[in-house]
Length: 358
Image 1 (tube, rainbow, N blue to C red):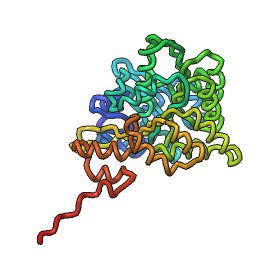
Image 2 (image 1 turned 180 degrees about the vertical axis):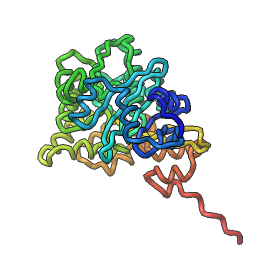
Image 3 (image 1 turned 45 degrees about the horizontal axis):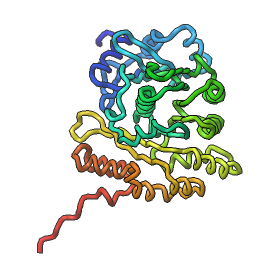
Image 4 (image 1 turned 120 degrees about the vertical axis):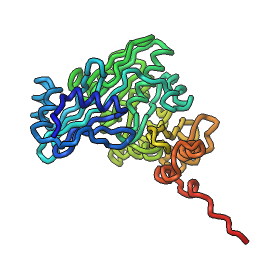
């Protein structure tokens, strides 16, 4: 059996091989997620003691105490010469395990990520709510950071971010950027968001809308003249509207729909898909830029009409996930199988029937 390395070595191996995450699990080898696939980094499996030793080497005494009390821990880790990582430590079958997400040293441009110019237009809004949605690992945090970077380059103002934990460290540029971390700088999203309204913000960034109270305050902040950028774990625009509203009791939902229809400016739903040639992953998106017709649909909760309005709103910079998939398929960037797996309308992506010879 090979010798156990230090945690720095495993993080370096993951990053140098193009990995996005390092996983440490008992009875499994250290593994990196590379282009969406888990690749073992050793030919032996980790014992409970080895896993615990690797994880504890990244924790301060305060963090160890929090882990013992709460059994879960989110934190940021910085390795000299390697960069920052978002870490999550947790228990599984009574054993300590962890996942480390690599954070690139530089915040990319929106265009580098594969976003359309519409997303840059969202950054120009002075008030309202813009949501970036997708499953875990779809690049929502990177998109938010790129949007804040764009805002800081193009205007003067105060940007307050509320994160758990802080991932990208954002330079001030033309804006004053205050990054607040849950557990270090503030106790909760809702408390930090409520206090942010008293800190003279122009832009408020919430790394995740987790609960009713946070969503309620975010809507109020957007309504009272602030630009609010936030993320949700939803896969498309209709589901995003439903998720926001269903958090509230039935007797409050009509009021929330009215409020949402007034403040929502845009939704960016994103997915990272494997490239057809296996060289990495590519971004596919659904973009909704809210106009009068969409506001009416949201207020009346006719979410089934949202897709049709996005399809006819291409001149306003909108497109559906199927539009994005079709373009990637035409370019040969993704496979037809992947398009069929991800699409909303399968008929659009089925291969044409073979021509019968007479």
